[in-house]
Amino acid sequence: MAVFNLKETDRDEVRQYQTGRYISSNEAVWRILGFPIHERHPAIEHLAVHLENGQRVHFTERNAAQMAQEPPKDTTLTAFFKLCHEDEFARNLFYWQVPRYYTWNSSGRRWQRRKSGKEVEGHPGIKSSDVLGRVYSIHPNQFECFFLRMLLFEIKGPQSFQHLLTVAGNICPTYREACKRRGLLEDDAHWDMTLQEASGSQVSCQLRRVFAIMLHNCDLSSPPTLWMNHLESLSEDILYRDRQQNRNMSFDFDSTVFNQALIFIEDAVISLGGKALDEYGLPKPYRRKASIPIEII
Image (tube, rainbow, N blue to C red; front, side, top):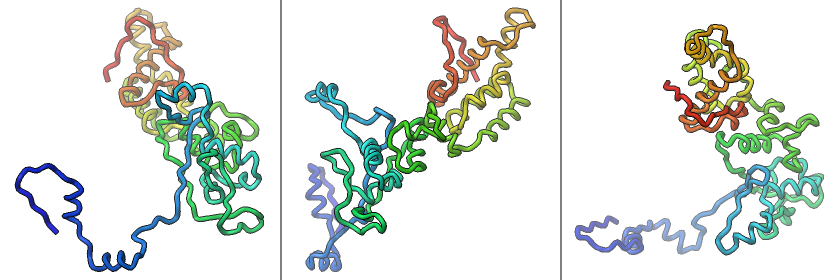
């Protein structure tokens, strides 16, 4: 049914919907017989992912004081850690598999065994269903949370955040390092070769630009290693400028030269929409209160 109106009137969305709605004979019979119109199968349980003490807290002006005094309740992730500590069967599951055998009690903020469903052979009292668990996506720019999510798909039955950081009995300082030790990250040999080849034909300012693009876009597994392998190539023009300004060719690479290179790299990364260098595991450059030269590339 087509409706045309050539005069200006107040828009009535309800009336417009009712006027333009059309039901075919097939749909009419389906509705008259009372058949279901739509359904969703299987059910999906969304699973939270966050860093330790990084869960979201929703508060208003009225409950802000109370939320500040009382710590946030468990999320599906922290409750999963507790479940793995208490339930032996849960230790055999990945995080995304939990909704298949357990239901989320939103009021009690805990996982409970399913009371209905198909019996799991060899595990009395455990029932399974078709429910799917979907872990929320994390942008790669959120480095640590992104790597935490990656570990949740590789480690069964973790009992704490520290458990995820532990590899071969050693606690890694970051989730990125834990992923690297487990072989989940690609090697940086390709990027190392790229910088090595570029250093033979490009000046240092261009090389720093390439390195900044790598940091922002290429998800490097070990940025500090690349920096240590090429810090002199990335700083040659700065050393040359210092020699010219001081008329002393005996000057050599030192912490001041490397610090200036880091400042230029950090400025380039931020201009691309990235973050400070310490977020990538690189040394944080020292910026003096006096004005610092801006590199134009």
